[in-house]
Image (tube, rainbow, N blue to C red; front, side, top):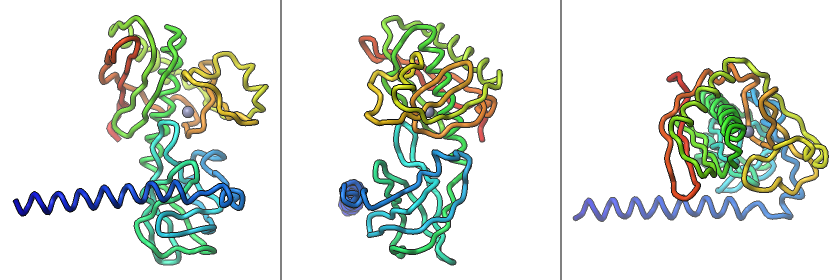
Length: 271
Ligand SMILES: [Zn+2]
C-alpha cells in the first residue's frame, strides 16, 4: 500500500510538473514578446547545421528563447530536436523545443538574457528524423500518385513512422507494392531541394498540398521538391538526396475504419 501511495505521488508530481511546463511555455510567448524577437530559424536555412552560436534573448524557469537556433521544434509530425546549450563550461540539456514560440526547454536554471551560448544538436537523432521525414514525402507521393488518396496525417519517429491517408479501397498487397516503389525512388538518387516561393507562385505547382488541409495563411510558402517525384509545402528538415534515406521497410498497414488507412514503416538499417 505504501509503495502504491509513493508511486501515485510521483506520477501526480510528474503530471503537474510536465503540464505546468507545457502550459507555461505556450503562454509565455505573448504577441507582444513575439514582436520584439527576431529568432532566426537556422534549421530552415541549413538542415545539416549541427552547431551554432546564439544569444539568449529571453529566459525564465520554463523556457529559453535565442536570437537564432538550429534546434527544430516539435511540429508538422516531426519531433523536436534535443541536444545541449553550452555557456562557458556549463552544459544545459535541451529536452525539447516547442513551436510556435521556439521556447527551448532546458533541464535547469542558469541561463539569462544576454548570455552567449553554443548550441549542439543531437545529430544522430536529427539525421535519422530527416531520413524518415524524407521517406514520408516519397511514400506519400507514391500513395497519392497511385491512388489519389489525400494524406490526413503523419508522425515521424526514430523507430517507426506512420502515414494516414483516406482511401476507400484497402489492399495490403498494393501497399507493399507502394513501399517497393518508394524504395526504387530512394535508390534512384533524386535531389531534394527547398525553395521559398510567393504563395501565388507556389499554388501553380500541381498537387502541392497533398495533406487534406489548406495551405497556411502566409505570404510565402516553403516548398520541398523531391526532383522528378513530388513537390510539397513543408516546414520540416530533409536530407539532400533520396539515396541518403537508405531504404524503408513496411511494418504494417491498418484499416482504421471507413476510408481511414494507416501505414507504419521503418528505416531499413539499424543505426
Ligand atoms: Zn517535409
